[in-house]
Length: 89
Image 1: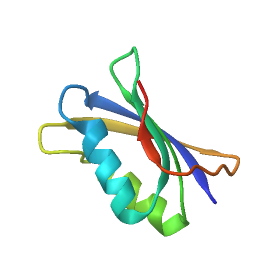
Image 2: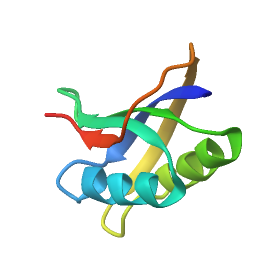
Image 3: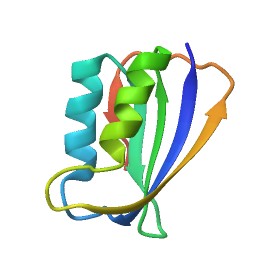
């Protein structure tokens, strides 16, 4: 399946971004993982159909209510597959 690597910048830690993204990813059928970075960003690797990934990226540009997303950096990766969508620590 198509796979993307996302870096979400802005006020995205401490605002339930990871938990909210996990819920959204599961609702739209995307698999992969999400984690906080040491730089204060959120990192996602996700696999799904082009349509599923488009929906995830659109959500990531806004995030949960308390988030203030400034930028979403998108890179396309070699296709990967995951069993589920998980939060990594």
